[in-house]
Length: 423
Image 1 (tube, rainbow, N blue to C red):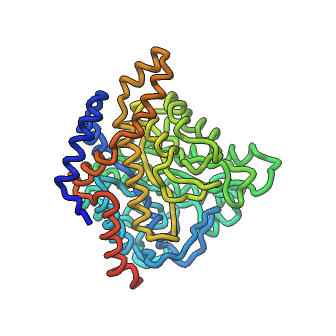
Image 2 (image 1 turned 90 degrees about the vertical axis):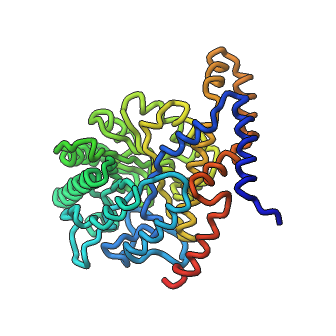
Image 3 (image 1 turned 120 degrees about the vertical axis):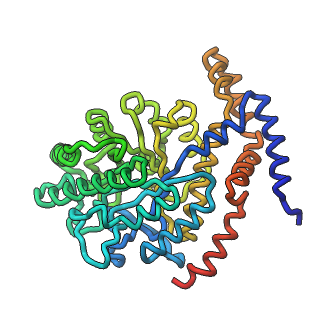
């Protein structure tokens, strides 16, 4: 078997660099730009959205995780160790996205509306030591006060107040992350509120949700510390016919209140792509948060693969010069495969899609389109698919100290043999 050496990788890169240069593409500039794009990895892939509040509690909110692959993280220390493994196999410097149920309360029960920054201090210490920013999410599911399917839009004022207080607490926690780490935390609100069957009153829940959000956001927070986002969904398990927080509702709210809109690639009709929505919503709001996932026939949160849909998202971000206005997070959970591999595969594919987009000859493509030469545009776009992008990616990984090709599976398998099988 022929061993691929560092010299082979660099030689292949040099040839690829020449091919792209012939089209006016500077591969070094593309790699430098890619190195400045952080992905926000989602903590909940590591423990199947369990959290540490009540690890044996049933998952609620219409969420479902399938599979029983061994090695699920059982506590925060194990989850952080697993995350260290995943981050170490990625080129670049990235972020972590936390949910409120990952608080560490020293074994004492703390209600969600009473959570404080101190309950996440070990996460902050860990992130600071490794150069990770932190993002955050209120957890408005898997709780007795969410069992009836409504939280911020609940007709019960007491239930609604509890979740408002929880979200207010989460904004303060997010601000504490930004203050400690020197990078703004994005605190994203998603709720499962909706009806299984067709409702008579569609208006009431949405007006209550609007009022709840206004109360949550009433106290201004420096955007250098925390930025607020709201996330829509088309339907969910138990909310097949109506979701209070629809795309149209949250788009209107984000525009009116000047906050971020979160677009989750699994939260729309299967024939819709969020790539087409980016230029539309960014014409009216300053920034967007993405939750990149892969839906298979429904919002199934499969591990992200290098699909046409993923490439279209990356292309729209790069072609529209939105890299500084779009925050990219991952959101999937698969318990049927090694959880660390799931993180790594999904993140590397997202980075590869971004690199593919950065390697396009944008000026030439725009000139063809502006000149009405749609034939030439199509021919060039198709020709790009045969260029040696993989050699550029391999060189990026090599230079970043990340495994090249599928070699990332070797340390994952070793960690599984040494650590995961004993959990």
